Length: 639
Image (cartoon, rainbow, N blue to C red; front, side, top):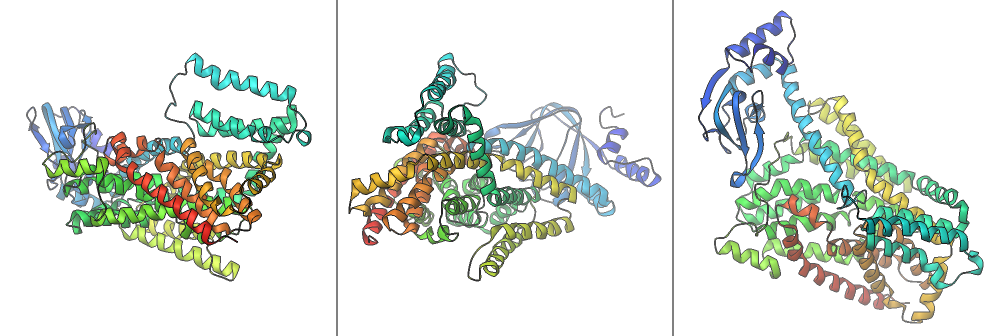
């Protein structure tokens, strides 16, 4: 008699009650469970096998193994596996190997199909199981993304040394105390060094602490002390309240876009891209081009795009014998370049509102796309790489040579055995249709509102969420309750960019109030005289350095964009060129900084430092090309 997979176990697994109908279902399942025994190190199933059924472990232990025999999970008595492949008819996704003698009960695919066809509640149970697994992965993703966006850092969770605590906190307290006691009246102390001191404090603190959000908040408090001494708390909260009030529309758009991207992930529609490519694309070049098109379609959030497309297309590029250096270059650099060019991405929404708050026109971001040289050059390089026309250099050249000589696809030090996503695969049209609705509704509502071609993303997102609710719930990919839970999860994912934006906006407001911009305009005019054509190139260079230092382009945008726009107005130059320079600097600085590689490397299946060395020569090249392009455009458009 079974001791683990009992009648009560099966009853609870299928959520059956005590009614006569449920007892007949339970009798049916119990009568079709087939006991099988596997000896030590034998395989219950292998990756790529056709599904015969799902399994319940009665006794013994089993390993879930990935590539290179990496152990992905360990299954104990009472565990089950294989339900998704049995339900969908797809191939097995991993090896299940016995660790010692293992007994399992097999429920055949035919029996499972009969159950789900005749019992919609049981079918819903499997969808809920898949949904819950995806939710757990999504919560882990939120933690990673929030860390990359400034809430936390690589050192989060580590204890600080006494010296670090002294520098980061006690010394700050000492500086603030001296500011409170000895700050002169701003009107009588407009010395350049005094006006620049908040920015100097910000740079020094971020170099020491490597924590962008903390640095910006403390620098905002520094500014508030300069303005009102002991009343600094009220002043700073006024700045924060002003940032919240002036940017409520942006904040709403960001959290709603996060909710929408969460719906795509939970429904499995994004995973459909991978399986469509796997069935239809036969060449390595085709796989990379499909990945590029996938990233164009879902260019909403660069970090989410890296994670999703890395999981989807890295295994496919491996099948085509593409070196990991090459696939990582395409899958890692493309999302940032696309998102910084798209008005419908989170970065595009953010930049649009930053520009408007700095006094620019609502359409200025779209006008500046043609001047975003570093991102445009990056996409040009990526397309050449896919076509095989980009000269190889550095780590990329070594990787190509290694694979040609019969070596591993991945460089030394890369953790192999990257897990494959087994969540609901969904339908490709469930991704394409909502994105089409988002694009069309944003353009239509924006054009109706302004009377000319424009984009209103807020209305577009709301309309798309309504459409997606009807589409997904009608197909039973999610229940209404799960749909609204996804919205809450999406809001949580967007917490970090909202907090970073508010803190940066509060700091920018303080800088403006102490007269820094007026001083800077006069200093630039005195310094450059009639040679202001070089300003776009200088702004690009300075903002690139600041962005690399912050390791957070959103903070740099909030600080740099108001200054750049003010300079363009003062000098009578094309504001689109200055906006493009700041946007391009965000991309270049992000690629130069080291921070992202420790997030992207594992997602792309490559050693982070080798990934960095792969893209560094091309990043340096496109950054220099962009600097020369801004110098040239500045000269050609000079007044």
